[in-house]
Length: 242
Image (cartoon, rainbow, N blue to C red):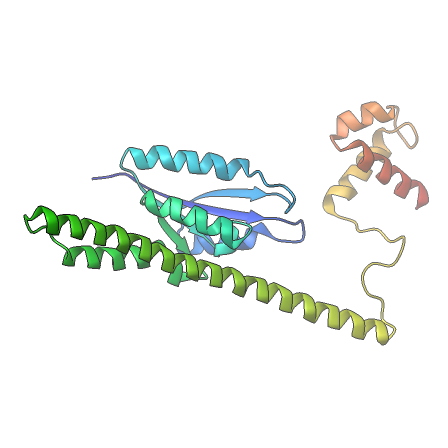
């Protein structure tokens, strides 16, 4: 009995996105999935965790392990259709079972099943000429199947981008209407957002900084609290302004 592994890959490209939603969606359908998460900006092309995952998949596939790779949607696999098509073909040819929860019609099993049904119809005849023709037909069928998948992936990306554009349009329209009505849109100038992290850090600054109730220098405070230098001085300015 062959070994099987299910991976789930979740990715966000901006701080405004919530990776938890993707993880929850994958876990809901595949509770036993090993989740790999990646958070990076659109200007960063390198995805170290993804690259490491692909290398692991290659090694496991070479050992005969059945690999299933689950995404919340196809746009989480790559940043654009061209990259997605290239990755899909590479993983498909490795025998990986690709699953896209929001676009099940491009799951690799859909195309693999189609290909297998065609292969079953093309059996060897014993004639070298005929078998050579059948081999060429199988190669063509494989390429044709992948081409269909590529077309559907491109359509999926176009649909996802259209949804993003529509959301941006609706948001912009809402902002313009609110502004026209004299409503405050976004944070007022000079306002700050308090989070659990910032509140706790400020408490530590007040407790340990010699500028407040403590005895430590700024350098020692930064080391003790474990926050970035810019963030530390930003919090100090906000505390002094309160």
